[in-house]
Length: 331
Image (cartoon, rainbow, N blue to C red; front, side, top):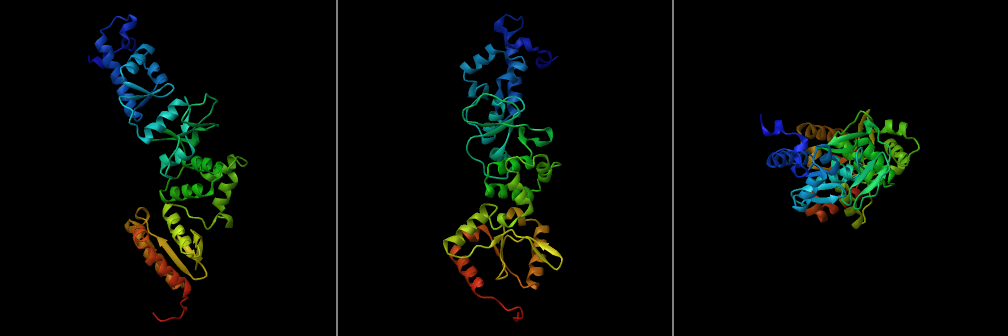
């Protein structure tokens, strides 16, 4: 029988007088810690160690030896303190106790909806002591509003977007909704479902407006590419387009990145992640053809062109906005 199979939790702390060979107990304990840390981005919680039979003396000994490093009260990094962002997120969730999940901007970062920075944000269903370095909130989290990503408990995508809206910031919420659509991050519980569940909760009005694509919510960039393009237009005094508007033509529906309706000019900001596949390539060309037939001119702009040829790009757009091509002009 192997050492691991014959190991009993009470053998982890030979110094308290349990009859077992100390070497076997330490090795077995170290294996338990290593396995746990490997699943949690290199961090463990004191309560998890105690549940596995690793007692206070063994924990204290590892802290004294520099094998554990205190990150938050009751949460340790195993072996070193060079932690990834995900390790910090995991440590924050562990520090807030059972039932806690990553939330708000941190959850959006984990899902890939936003670039998350700042202190980890966590929500849990019960009151608890504040933890330095963590933005912690108290809220109920039903089972269908929680998930796990890369081993980290986190709010689902719809709940994450709803929480972002509760912060009252329109643009990040729009970006998150857009990225969720691009990445096809769906959930059995949708944003409309959450609105029905929480019709008066903070953020509900903003979510409702964005879902309805109300006039107040249009015209704002949804991602970094669109932000940079909008800044370039502003810097050179060019009128802003409508960003991501709904456009219906002959029974078909389109949503161009940028539209100057009066000039019938469309600019598509071609990011590789959205336009790289063959299906996307074919769909883009078909859409360009349909729009051209309806009198819309389409310009495609890449991030490289935006960064390296801004003056030329501005000149071309200015020219197109100042000249309206007649519908009957020869090709």
